[in-house]
Length: 348
Image (cartoon, rainbow, N blue to C red; front, side, top):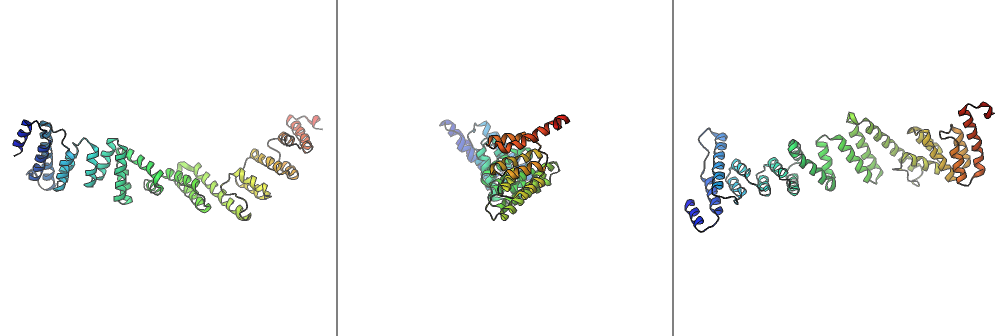
């Protein structure tokens, strides 16, 4: 007796929403698939017709406040999931749409509706719900299969995982074959690790990911050099019985530590292995001055023509208060200047 109930509601100036909701539920319970076609096609045809009638009636009678999600839930409860999905398309509130879609296990549609709503909290709600319910592989495939529609969800997942769940982020990058991002993540983790072996393993992982991308040859080379440097630094620490902290230092700092701890041959090896430019070798000047080792400084100056000339030697020695030691380098600088000018007479 829905028509009578509607007329009474109108007479009493009551909203027709409860009556419409009850009528829609009854319509769903009593409706059957149409006779056009058979099987699933017939059921779909019947769903379309019932959905059309319900939506049309709501619009005609001003049932704008009736939640289509409530009607859709009733349809789903009686086994009409197709009809429930169609009714949910008319629900204007995503916060009402999405929970029911998740209950119906319409996972992809639920995530798309959440993204379309622009509600970040709702998107996170769906992502975390699916992460807990689905296997990891199914979860990642769902996001990756969404294409541009789910780009926002993918980015929000990265933000969450970077802050809260690094293992998830690592698995996500691996699943999506994002090698550069995987390499950068490994490097970021390496910077946070204090254990030498674990840190070295993270750098090696970054090297492998970069090596797998033909456009990242430079980065792969840098990771290879970093691995070699860290390995050498571990060896240096063992040789010094752990008294000197080499691990994690730059090439220049490693050379400095070697010289300060009387490991000149090791310093030379570092310079050779990592092709330290001649101008960078000037770091030795400052180190020998710091040590006050003028014999080593003299040997260093004679080992190879100074790429910075001898003026720097003079200036730094004088600034440090070693005028007498600076005198020998004055003559060498004068000779060097004459050679550069081609002034044989002055050189004599």
